[in-house]
Image 1 (cartoon, one colour):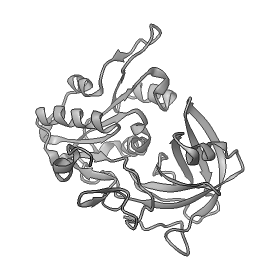
Image 2 (tube, rainbow, N blue to C red):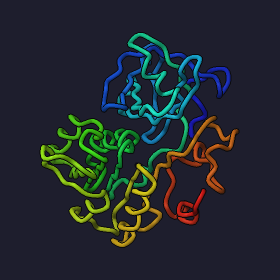
Image 3 (tube, rainbow, N blue to C red):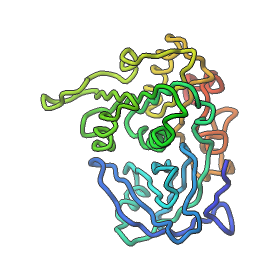
Length: 282
């Protein structure tokens, strides 16, 4: 786990980075590109890690890194506007400044997955932490078996990276399945819940690794379906979106019984999470 490679004086001190661009993804979601061209080596990270983004004078929030780990000169975050800090981040225009500290957290187990089939499951904003995984898998496609991407959203308008999803869907190196909870007559894709997409995946449970991020209710039902299909709990990995405040295990806001999500996660295998994820009010 990284302990904050951008911070030079203190792990809690953000470093200001200039905004290259902001791109609208949906009505309440945008992707920001931050300029790291002046830093030697750019901004290396591992898929699944996150940064703390600081809106000057307002506060900071944890946001997964959504960029390509093979392009450390480009730092991307996809942000959903849900409060005052994320609204302040959206108001920062091109050429403005954001504070950044990180990267933090345990990444997706992509080394463990080498030679195996990989099923990537994303619900809603959960595709943002998994975008870097897909880009890594495509860059190193020969190192993995079959790759499947299952994506769900409440509506077509809520789907992230629409053009990229279309491009991935035409790529013979992976299987892409997309569903929405509800849609109008203009939608020609599938309608239904994400776990149902597993019925259309040629899944060999003995050689499958599942990587998953999204609403916890979606992950719980998808885990049950993966277990029914025979995928071992130790090969099902979840990224938790708990309330992280400090990112270094000081404040305790993200504690999940024995775990601090910021330090022990956000990516954790289900065999370690199983006793706690279904507990009420945890």
